[in-house]
Image (cartoon, rainbow, N blue to C red; front, side, top):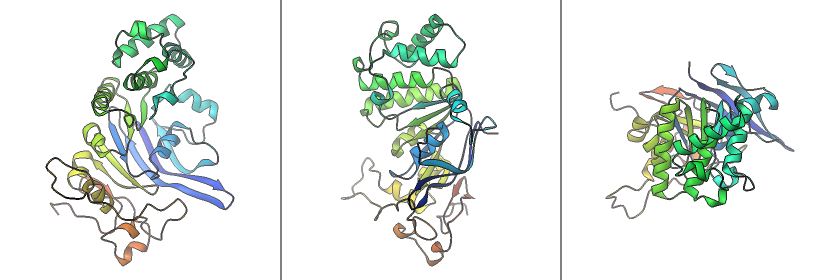
Length: 323
């Protein structure tokens, strides 16, 4: 049994015109010690999936169906008090902007100690020692001195390390990392990704890495799930999906990545735009943008079915080479 199981998850937003479905039947499992990347365009539903797992959906958003199981326990339907006990203790979160994730009026030590004391049965002194150890583990130099500094006294990369230390403060089983390296330069980004891989291995946490950067996924993740219009359209081992994409949308994303020695005068692009929630076309949501669309693509929403080493939601996918 996977540590984190997301099954047929649907999220909707209630408006004056009725409920608008933003996530539609998302299913994904993550094992302990595994990093699963989730990629797709802005608005595809990546961050919404992470928010649903953490229990941070804001009204009028709500889970309309499906299950989220952590180590066999279903989290859907738990009240806010129960989710607060799980959030931070069993599920940690790393957010995109460390400046908004950290309280500017408190030292990083105060924020770490507060989190540790809230979730673990330890004294204040023991929590401070753990906080220093976490800062040291995440690569903050002179951790015993810098624990009393404020967030603005750290660089962007150092602040992100503090956020990672906060996510690990109570030794959670699952970490949701939502665009954790977007605001960082390339060299710092590589350090943060290396840190995330090492911590995943050492702490045996299950990591959901949400990003729009396929390069980050290729470098960091074990498996990848490609999202489009609130659904997973392809999922499988990173090496297989990157080298042999089966879904036309995944193939389009791969063709848009520049490579060393690429002599094309222009990068490939996917024409059109992703449909808004509640305005999906009949059948396959990618159909109007798909170069391989056929008449039967509009018959019904294609299910996510196994194909080779991956799962693909397409009526006319690229077939495995061995087939």
